[in-house]
Image (tube, rainbow over all chains, first blue to last red; front, side, top):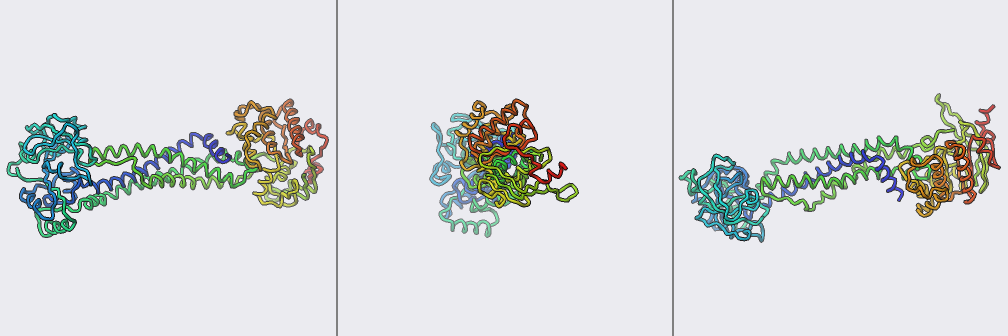
Length: 401
Length: 225
């Protein structure tokens, strides 16, 4: 009972500095965990979120841009490819499924993507999972001005079965660029936690023949999403399109190409991590300063404990435990900071990309970071603990008479 | 119970030369005896008590408490012996201000052989008339009550020897008389020897056994010449 009581009372006696220091630690701990978890989860989510496709074929350009545009519905399309090229890959013996898409319009900032109904009937967007329509919805007909809306987009745009809308030209929302065609929502997709949730899907002919679009490219597509029969087909098509050909780009494998993106922004992760480490260091330093500064006021108490029979190592342990206690308090509060930060970042990423990060997902860093904080704070307590250890009892406790 | 021989302790003077503060050739106190030492301020009384308590390490000499040679022990051993066999009552009470009355007494027990025994601590506080103040903090008590807490803390471990350094120095006459009576009574009940130092003639007058510290301590004697 002795040590916990001493630690508890001491923390309570210096409540303000305890809370301020713990708050600093909580911030550092929460920030570190958030940076780590967002990095880890987003890396996994983006590299695995291939929407069920192995590769993307598109106009000549950067593979990353092609993948971001066709799979994540971000970035501009590198250009169009002809219907003949789309048909050629569809018929290739190594290709299992080929789904053409056409982009170029939006609905109040949400991307409109033209595609074929087979995307929803044949493709598993993740192993064992196909797109499901919410109750009362049906797929659009390939030759009608109809739409199926992703769950996130439907909620944000306030669309439901029977709603109508007019697309806006371009990938960015411009109120003056409204098309004349009116589309009717026939279905809303159940949430998939993929980028598809943020898309308004219409028949590919709808995009190709939209008023204002170039009639000469009325059969062109923006890209073809490809499922292969075997990985060998990927290397074969890579050779065919990228090395031997010069008109088209074959982006394969999708995960590896997205990983390039993370390689490019790794410096940003490092900066964030560095900031978090510095905050952690400052927090540990503040524990040292806080306890060290309170030592003068507490030396008498420690000397009294020694006079009562407490050993040097007991008072050393008490001060160390106090430092660790502040670290523990900060680490516990750190989970609240982590939850708040992570929820905010996850919401932002979901709104921007459709990729969902999971706050409740376990990762060893959620244990390592708080434990490391507690250890760091205990380390910060070593110097004040040594001061306590060396407290001269007789001189501190009473004047010599 | 207490046997001191050839005990010396020096402190460096501001000029750096060592100044002998304690030089006691022999001092004895029997089990259960109550002895008052008279001494002026600066005579080395507190240093002597601190040496006996093992709070200070002697330069030379022996202190034997209940058959254990304190001066032969290392610091951790002295701490253990102090917790097990000694009770120390200070002039300034030395209560821990951040802890309740009950916790102060429990802390006094927790380093001793039996560990913290809440029931016994309550009983001891009841014995000194503070059974209704268990959860008060020292600052919420009168000085007389604070000294009672100190007495309870010093005696809760059933020490064999109680050292009291000017225990009534901060109390008014009435509280001083009560506190002194309480200390002596509880020591008697528990069979503990009491070594009390004071310069107050009224305090000293109540003791059958009393000595001048100057007779015991050579530097104090030299200072009076």
